[in-house]
Image (cartoon, rainbow, N blue to C red; front, side, top):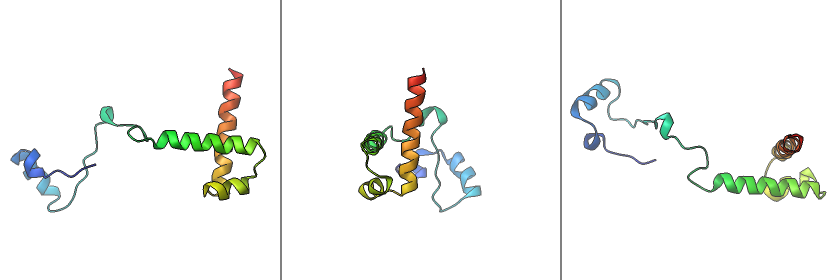
Length: 97
């Protein structure tokens, strides 16, 4: 997200209308729904998180405890449990189809 000076991009009539509601403040103008990107689409966050979660699940299957995983990945035990449950559910659904 970047800041753009309104006087450089908006016609004066539009600026006058906006100034009736807000003046001298920052305002966020969201993207149109058709132009929105999904979380992690423009960065590698989504892939990194998926890879990390797969590692957590694999280590859990190999016998690493939830407490140990929690300490390894700096996540709450409840978060580790949720990751494991989610991957188990996805695996069962894949195997069922």
